[in-house]
Image 1 (cartoon, protein in one colour):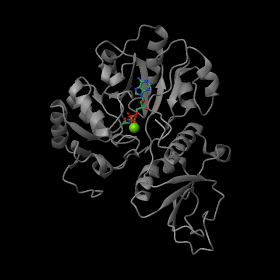
Image 2: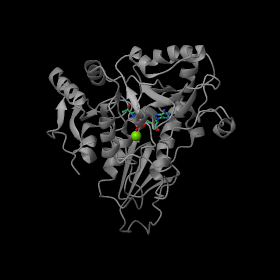
Image 3: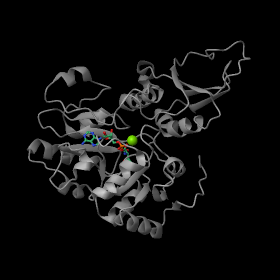
Image 4: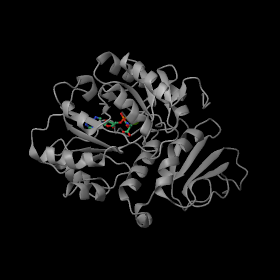
Length: 362
Ligand code: TXA
Ligand code: MG
Protein backbone atom coordinates (compact mmCIF):
# COMPACT_ATOMS: atom_id res chain seq x y z
CA UNK A 1 0.00 0.00 0.00
CA UNK A 2 1.41 3.38 -0.98
CA UNK A 3 0.00 6.24 1.03
CA UNK A 4 2.80 8.71 0.45
CA UNK A 5 1.24 12.06 -0.48
CA UNK A 6 4.48 13.08 -2.18
CA UNK A 7 4.13 10.30 -4.77
CA UNK A 8 5.61 11.35 -8.11
CA UNK A 9 2.32 10.82 -9.93
CA UNK A 10 0.50 13.29 -7.66
CA UNK A 11 0.78 16.73 -9.27
CA UNK A 12 0.07 19.99 -7.47
CA UNK A 13 -2.79 21.57 -9.41
CA UNK A 14 -1.19 24.43 -11.35
CA UNK A 15 -2.18 25.78 -14.78
CA UNK A 16 0.76 23.77 -16.21
CA UNK A 17 -0.22 20.47 -14.58
CA UNK A 18 -3.86 20.97 -15.57
CA UNK A 19 -2.67 21.43 -19.17
CA UNK A 20 -0.56 18.25 -18.86
CA UNK A 21 -3.59 16.37 -17.56
CA UNK A 22 -5.75 17.76 -20.34
CA UNK A 23 -3.23 16.60 -22.97
CA UNK A 24 -3.06 13.16 -21.32
CA UNK A 25 -6.86 12.86 -21.41
CA UNK A 26 -6.92 13.90 -25.07
CA UNK A 27 -4.31 11.18 -25.71
CA UNK A 28 -6.67 8.61 -24.21
CA UNK A 29 -4.95 8.24 -20.82
CA UNK A 30 -6.45 8.01 -17.33
CA UNK A 31 -6.22 10.89 -14.83
CA UNK A 32 -7.09 11.07 -11.12
CA UNK A 33 -9.57 13.94 -11.00
CA UNK A 34 -10.40 15.80 -7.77
CA UNK A 35 -14.07 16.66 -7.33
CA UNK A 36 -15.99 18.02 -4.37
CA UNK A 37 -17.51 14.57 -3.71
CA UNK A 38 -14.78 11.95 -4.29
CA UNK A 39 -11.81 11.61 -6.68
CA UNK A 40 -12.74 10.35 -10.15
CA UNK A 41 -10.86 8.06 -12.53
CA UNK A 42 -11.19 10.23 -15.63
CA UNK A 43 -10.92 9.37 -19.32
CA UNK A 44 -12.37 10.90 -22.45
CA UNK A 45 -15.91 9.62 -22.72
CA UNK A 46 -16.18 9.85 -26.48
CA UNK A 47 -13.72 7.07 -27.31
CA UNK A 48 -14.41 3.38 -26.61
CA UNK A 49 -10.71 2.55 -26.13
CA UNK A 50 -10.34 5.18 -23.37
CA UNK A 51 -13.58 4.14 -21.67
CA UNK A 52 -12.42 0.50 -21.82
CA UNK A 53 -9.32 1.47 -19.82
CA UNK A 54 -11.54 2.67 -16.96
CA UNK A 55 -13.44 -0.63 -16.81
CA UNK A 56 -10.19 -2.62 -16.96
CA UNK A 57 -8.39 -0.54 -14.31
CA UNK A 58 -11.32 -0.71 -11.88
CA UNK A 59 -12.27 -4.31 -12.75
CA UNK A 60 -15.72 -2.86 -13.13
CA UNK A 61 -18.53 -4.92 -14.66
CA UNK A 62 -19.49 -3.61 -18.12
CA UNK A 63 -23.11 -3.56 -16.92
CA UNK A 64 -22.42 -0.60 -14.62
CA UNK A 65 -22.74 2.70 -16.55
CA UNK A 66 -20.47 5.74 -16.11
CA UNK A 67 -21.15 9.40 -15.36
CA UNK A 68 -20.09 11.91 -18.03
CA UNK A 69 -18.59 15.09 -16.53
CA UNK A 70 -18.59 18.44 -18.31
CA UNK A 71 -17.44 21.94 -17.35
CA UNK A 72 -20.68 23.75 -18.09
CA UNK A 73 -24.42 22.84 -18.05
CA UNK A 74 -24.69 23.86 -21.72
CA UNK A 75 -22.18 21.16 -22.65
CA UNK A 76 -24.77 18.57 -21.53
CA UNK A 77 -27.14 19.29 -24.44
CA UNK A 78 -25.30 17.26 -27.13
CA UNK A 79 -25.26 14.25 -24.75
CA UNK A 80 -28.97 14.07 -23.95
CA UNK A 81 -32.25 13.93 -25.76
CA UNK A 82 -34.97 16.03 -24.16
CA UNK A 83 -38.07 15.76 -26.30
CA UNK A 84 -40.51 16.46 -23.46
CA UNK A 85 -41.34 19.92 -22.05
CA UNK A 86 -41.45 18.40 -18.57
CA UNK A 87 -37.91 17.02 -18.92
CA UNK A 88 -36.63 20.31 -20.35
CA UNK A 89 -38.19 22.25 -17.47
CA UNK A 90 -36.78 19.81 -14.90
CA UNK A 91 -33.34 19.96 -16.49
CA UNK A 92 -33.33 23.78 -16.40
CA UNK A 93 -34.36 23.68 -12.72
CA UNK A 94 -31.88 20.98 -11.67
CA UNK A 95 -28.97 22.46 -13.55
CA UNK A 96 -29.28 25.59 -11.38
CA UNK A 97 -27.64 23.37 -8.70
CA UNK A 98 -24.56 22.94 -10.91
CA UNK A 99 -21.68 23.01 -10.44
CA UNK A 100 -22.47 20.70 -7.54
CA UNK A 101 -22.75 17.20 -6.04
CA UNK A 102 -25.68 16.24 -8.28
CA UNK A 103 -25.72 13.70 -11.13
CA UNK A 104 -28.70 13.81 -13.48
CA UNK A 105 -29.94 10.76 -15.38
CA UNK A 106 -31.55 11.77 -18.68
CA UNK A 107 -32.49 10.12 -21.97
CA UNK A 108 -29.26 9.76 -23.93
CA UNK A 109 -28.50 11.19 -27.36
CA UNK A 110 -27.30 9.02 -30.26
CA UNK A 111 -23.77 10.36 -29.86
CA UNK A 112 -23.19 8.80 -26.41
CA UNK A 113 -21.25 5.54 -26.49
CA UNK A 114 -22.97 2.28 -25.48
CA UNK A 115 -20.04 1.39 -23.25
CA UNK A 116 -20.69 4.58 -21.21
CA UNK A 117 -24.40 3.84 -20.69
CA UNK A 118 -23.93 0.06 -20.40
CA UNK A 119 -26.23 -0.21 -23.37
CA UNK A 120 -29.11 1.59 -21.61
CA UNK A 121 -31.16 4.40 -23.10
CA UNK A 122 -30.24 6.92 -20.38
CA UNK A 123 -27.02 8.74 -19.56
CA UNK A 124 -25.76 10.19 -16.26
CA UNK A 125 -24.23 13.70 -16.42
CA UNK A 126 -22.65 16.02 -13.87
CA UNK A 127 -20.86 19.38 -13.57
CA UNK A 128 -18.64 19.00 -10.47
CA UNK A 129 -18.00 21.95 -8.16
CA UNK A 130 -14.26 21.54 -7.64
CA UNK A 131 -12.22 24.42 -9.17
CA UNK A 132 -9.52 22.03 -10.45
CA UNK A 133 -12.11 19.75 -12.06
CA UNK A 134 -13.84 22.71 -13.67
CA UNK A 135 -10.59 24.11 -15.05
CA UNK A 136 -9.61 20.74 -16.45
CA UNK A 137 -13.04 20.00 -17.94
CA UNK A 138 -13.17 23.44 -19.56
CA UNK A 139 -9.63 23.07 -20.89
CA UNK A 140 -10.17 19.60 -22.36
CA UNK A 141 -13.65 20.50 -23.64
CA UNK A 142 -14.79 16.89 -24.09
CA UNK A 143 -17.27 14.80 -22.08
CA UNK A 144 -15.14 13.05 -19.44
CA UNK A 145 -16.22 9.68 -18.06
CA UNK A 146 -15.25 9.42 -14.39
CA UNK A 147 -16.33 6.80 -11.89
CA UNK A 148 -14.92 6.98 -8.37
CA UNK A 149 -11.17 6.26 -8.56
CA UNK A 150 -11.17 3.00 -6.60
CA UNK A 151 -11.00 -0.63 -7.62
CA UNK A 152 -14.60 -1.87 -7.93
CA UNK A 153 -16.32 -2.46 -4.57
CA UNK A 154 -13.50 -0.87 -2.55
CA UNK A 155 -13.85 2.42 -0.68
CA UNK A 156 -14.14 5.61 -2.75
CA UNK A 157 -11.10 7.95 -2.62
CA UNK A 158 -11.27 11.32 -0.90
CA UNK A 159 -7.55 12.19 -1.05
CA UNK A 160 -5.05 12.00 -3.94
CA UNK A 161 -3.02 9.26 -2.24
CA UNK A 162 -6.14 7.08 -2.06
CA UNK A 163 -6.13 7.06 -5.88
CA UNK A 164 -2.47 6.02 -5.96
CA UNK A 165 -3.25 3.26 -3.51
CA UNK A 166 -4.93 0.77 -5.84
CA UNK A 167 -4.69 2.48 -9.23
CA UNK A 168 -1.06 3.62 -9.34
CA UNK A 169 -0.28 1.66 -12.50
CA UNK A 170 -3.40 2.84 -14.31
CA UNK A 171 -3.25 6.61 -13.88
CA UNK A 172 -0.92 8.91 -15.76
CA UNK A 173 -1.24 11.60 -13.07
CA UNK A 174 -3.44 12.46 -10.12
CA UNK A 175 -4.19 16.17 -9.83
CA UNK A 176 -3.94 17.16 -6.18
CA UNK A 177 -7.14 18.92 -5.25
CA UNK A 178 -6.76 18.31 -1.52
CA UNK A 179 -9.34 16.52 0.59
CA UNK A 180 -12.78 16.27 -0.97
CA UNK A 181 -15.22 18.65 0.72
CA UNK A 182 -18.27 16.38 0.68
CA UNK A 183 -16.55 12.99 0.98
CA UNK A 184 -19.52 10.94 -0.33
CA UNK A 185 -20.45 10.32 -3.97
CA UNK A 186 -22.94 12.65 -5.69
CA UNK A 187 -26.70 12.35 -5.40
CA UNK A 188 -27.91 10.49 -8.51
CA UNK A 189 -31.30 11.85 -9.58
CA UNK A 190 -33.31 10.47 -12.47
CA UNK A 191 -35.38 12.89 -14.53
CA UNK A 192 -35.35 10.50 -17.47
CA UNK A 193 -39.07 9.72 -17.37
CA UNK A 194 -41.42 12.71 -17.64
CA UNK A 195 -44.28 10.50 -16.38
CA UNK A 196 -42.51 9.76 -13.05
CA UNK A 197 -41.52 12.28 -10.38
CA UNK A 198 -37.81 13.14 -10.17
CA UNK A 199 -36.34 10.17 -8.28
CA UNK A 200 -33.18 9.87 -6.19
CA UNK A 201 -31.40 6.66 -7.24
CA UNK A 202 -28.37 7.17 -4.98
CA UNK A 203 -28.54 9.32 -1.86
CA UNK A 204 -25.89 11.96 -1.31
CA UNK A 205 -25.46 15.28 0.42
CA UNK A 206 -28.36 17.01 -1.38
CA UNK A 207 -31.63 17.05 0.53
CA UNK A 208 -34.90 16.14 -1.17
CA UNK A 209 -36.28 19.36 0.36
CA UNK A 210 -33.74 21.42 -1.57
CA UNK A 211 -34.49 19.54 -4.79
CA UNK A 212 -38.23 19.95 -4.25
CA UNK A 213 -37.78 23.68 -3.74
CA UNK A 214 -35.86 23.86 -7.04
CA UNK A 215 -38.36 21.69 -9.00
CA UNK A 216 -41.52 22.98 -7.36
CA UNK A 217 -42.79 19.37 -7.23
CA UNK A 218 -42.29 16.27 -5.05
CA UNK A 219 -39.09 14.27 -5.34
CA UNK A 220 -38.99 10.56 -4.54
CA UNK A 221 -36.19 9.37 -2.27
CA UNK A 222 -35.47 6.45 0.02
CA UNK A 223 -35.27 8.88 2.94
CA UNK A 224 -38.75 10.28 2.43
CA UNK A 225 -40.71 7.76 0.36
CA UNK A 226 -41.63 4.13 0.42
CA UNK A 227 -39.31 2.95 -2.38
CA UNK A 228 -40.93 -0.51 -2.48
CA UNK A 229 -44.19 1.15 -3.46
CA UNK A 230 -42.32 3.17 -6.05
CA UNK A 231 -40.64 0.09 -7.55
CA UNK A 232 -44.03 -1.56 -7.96
CA UNK A 233 -45.10 1.27 -10.29
CA UNK A 234 -44.45 0.23 -13.86
CA UNK A 235 -43.06 3.58 -15.03
CA UNK A 236 -40.63 4.02 -12.14
CA UNK A 237 -37.00 4.33 -13.30
CA UNK A 238 -34.72 1.36 -12.66
CA UNK A 239 -32.51 1.69 -9.60
CA UNK A 240 -28.92 2.74 -10.13
CA UNK A 241 -27.22 -0.34 -11.58
CA UNK A 242 -24.07 0.30 -9.54
CA UNK A 243 -25.80 0.00 -6.19
CA UNK A 244 -24.88 -3.59 -5.45
CA UNK A 245 -25.24 -4.83 -1.90
CA UNK A 246 -21.52 -5.22 -1.39
CA UNK A 247 -19.83 -1.93 -2.14
CA UNK A 248 -17.49 0.52 -0.49
CA UNK A 249 -16.16 -2.38 1.61
CA UNK A 250 -12.87 -2.53 3.48
CA UNK A 251 -11.07 -5.92 3.40
CA UNK A 252 -11.12 -6.07 7.21
CA UNK A 253 -14.45 -7.48 8.45
CA UNK A 254 -16.75 -4.61 9.42
CA UNK A 255 -19.83 -4.87 11.61
CA UNK A 256 -22.47 -2.26 12.40
CA UNK A 257 -23.31 -2.03 16.10
CA UNK A 258 -25.77 0.03 18.15
CA UNK A 259 -24.20 3.33 19.15
CA UNK A 260 -25.08 2.49 22.76
CA UNK A 261 -23.07 -0.76 22.72
CA UNK A 262 -19.99 0.04 24.81
CA UNK A 263 -18.15 -3.24 25.24
CA UNK A 264 -16.43 -5.26 22.51
CA UNK A 265 -18.28 -8.55 21.80
CA UNK A 266 -15.60 -11.08 22.75
CA UNK A 267 -14.42 -8.97 25.66
CA UNK A 268 -13.11 -11.14 28.48
CA UNK A 269 -12.58 -8.37 30.94
CA UNK A 270 -10.32 -6.28 28.77
CA UNK A 271 -7.68 -8.99 28.24
CA UNK A 272 -8.80 -10.44 24.92
CA UNK A 273 -6.11 -10.47 22.28
CA UNK A 274 -8.16 -9.68 19.19
CA UNK A 275 -7.63 -6.18 17.91
CA UNK A 276 -11.02 -4.64 17.29
CA UNK A 277 -11.35 -1.01 16.23
CA UNK A 278 -14.48 0.87 17.24
CA UNK A 279 -15.45 3.81 15.05
CA UNK A 280 -17.98 6.14 16.63
CA UNK A 281 -19.88 8.44 14.34
CA UNK A 282 -20.25 11.14 17.00
CA UNK A 283 -19.33 11.91 20.58
CA UNK A 284 -15.95 11.72 22.27
CA UNK A 285 -13.34 9.08 21.34
CA UNK A 286 -12.98 7.71 24.87
CA UNK A 287 -11.54 4.21 25.22
CA UNK A 288 -14.02 1.35 25.66
CA UNK A 289 -13.43 -2.08 27.23
CA UNK A 290 -12.19 -4.70 24.82
CA UNK A 291 -11.49 -2.37 21.90
CA UNK A 292 -7.91 -1.88 20.72
CA UNK A 293 -8.77 1.69 19.75
CA UNK A 294 -11.76 4.03 19.53
CA UNK A 295 -12.07 6.76 16.88
CA UNK A 296 -14.77 9.39 16.56
CA UNK A 297 -15.63 10.83 13.15
CA UNK A 298 -17.31 13.93 14.58
CA UNK A 299 -17.08 14.68 18.30
CA UNK A 300 -19.59 17.51 17.68
CA UNK A 301 -22.00 15.17 15.87
CA UNK A 302 -22.05 17.04 12.55
CA UNK A 303 -23.25 14.75 9.71
CA UNK A 304 -21.28 16.80 7.14
CA UNK A 305 -18.10 16.15 9.12
CA UNK A 306 -18.94 12.45 9.40
CA UNK A 307 -19.42 12.23 5.62
CA UNK A 308 -16.22 14.17 5.05
CA UNK A 309 -14.13 11.82 7.22
CA UNK A 310 -15.82 8.46 6.68
CA UNK A 311 -13.93 7.02 3.70
CA UNK A 312 -10.49 8.13 4.88
CA UNK A 313 -11.21 6.57 8.27
CA UNK A 314 -12.35 3.30 6.66
CA UNK A 315 -9.19 3.18 4.56
CA UNK A 316 -6.97 3.84 7.60
CA UNK A 317 -8.91 1.25 9.57
CA UNK A 318 -8.19 -1.20 6.76
CA UNK A 319 -4.41 -0.84 6.97
CA UNK A 320 -3.97 -4.30 8.51
CA UNK A 321 -3.57 -3.11 12.08
CA UNK A 322 -7.02 -4.32 13.14
CA UNK A 323 -8.68 -7.72 12.88
CA UNK A 324 -12.14 -6.26 12.69
CA UNK A 325 -13.95 -2.94 12.70
CA UNK A 326 -17.14 -2.05 14.52
CA UNK A 327 -18.92 1.12 13.58
CA UNK A 328 -22.00 2.87 14.96
CA UNK A 329 -25.28 2.27 13.16
CA UNK A 330 -27.38 5.30 12.31
CA UNK A 331 -30.83 5.35 13.82
CA UNK A 332 -32.30 8.20 11.76
CA UNK A 333 -35.01 9.00 14.35
CA UNK A 334 -32.33 9.82 16.92
CA UNK A 335 -30.73 12.27 14.51
CA UNK A 336 -33.81 14.34 13.71
CA UNK A 337 -32.13 17.51 14.89
CA UNK A 338 -29.59 17.14 12.09
CA UNK A 339 -32.04 18.43 9.50
CA UNK A 340 -30.93 16.56 6.34
CA UNK A 341 -32.48 13.07 6.28
CA UNK A 342 -30.99 12.43 2.85
CA UNK A 343 -27.42 12.91 4.05
CA UNK A 344 -28.12 10.59 6.98
CA UNK A 345 -29.66 8.09 4.56
CA UNK A 346 -26.55 8.37 2.37
CA UNK A 347 -24.18 7.73 5.29
CA UNK A 348 -26.35 4.89 6.54
CA UNK A 349 -26.52 3.36 3.04
CA UNK A 350 -22.72 3.45 2.61
CA UNK A 351 -22.22 1.93 6.09
CA UNK A 352 -24.60 -0.90 5.31
CA UNK A 353 -22.79 -1.66 2.07
CA UNK A 354 -19.38 -1.43 3.77
CA UNK A 355 -20.52 -3.99 6.33
CA UNK A 356 -21.78 -6.50 3.79
CA UNK A 357 -19.14 -9.21 3.70
CA UNK A 358 -21.20 -11.55 1.55
CA UNK A 359 -18.94 -12.36 -1.40
CA UNK A 360 -21.79 -13.91 -3.30
CA UNK A 361 -23.35 -10.47 -3.66
CA UNK A 362 -23.07 -9.13 -7.20
O1 TXA B 1 -19.60 11.84 -6.97
C1 TXA B 1 -19.63 11.10 -7.96
O2 TXA B 1 -20.67 10.85 -8.58
C2 TXA B 1 -18.28 10.52 -8.43
C3 TXA B 1 -17.44 11.68 -8.95
C4 TXA B 1 -16.12 11.21 -9.52
O3 TXA B 1 -18.16 12.43 -9.89
N1 TXA B 1 -18.50 9.52 -9.42
C5 TXA B 1 -19.06 8.32 -9.11
O4 TXA B 1 -19.13 7.46 -10.19
O5 TXA B 1 -19.45 8.04 -8.00
P1 TXA B 1 -19.42 5.89 -9.98
O6 TXA B 1 -19.28 5.31 -11.37
O7 TXA B 1 -18.54 5.37 -8.94
O8 TXA B 1 -20.92 5.86 -9.58
C6 TXA B 1 -21.89 6.25 -10.52
C7 TXA B 1 -23.22 5.70 -10.14
C8 TXA B 1 -23.25 4.19 -10.24
O9 TXA B 1 -24.05 3.69 -9.17
C9 TXA B 1 -23.93 3.97 -11.59
O10 TXA B 1 -24.62 2.73 -11.65
C10 TXA B 1 -24.90 5.13 -11.63
O11 TXA B 1 -24.19 6.21 -11.08
N2 TXA B 1 -25.26 5.45 -13.01
C11 TXA B 1 -24.46 5.81 -14.03
N3 TXA B 1 -25.16 5.96 -15.16
C12 TXA B 1 -26.45 5.70 -14.86
C13 TXA B 1 -27.66 5.67 -15.61
N4 TXA B 1 -27.69 5.94 -16.91
N5 TXA B 1 -28.81 5.34 -14.96
C14 TXA B 1 -28.80 5.07 -13.63
N6 TXA B 1 -27.68 5.07 -12.86
C15 TXA B 1 -26.52 5.38 -13.48
MG1 MG C 1 -18.00 4.22 -7.38
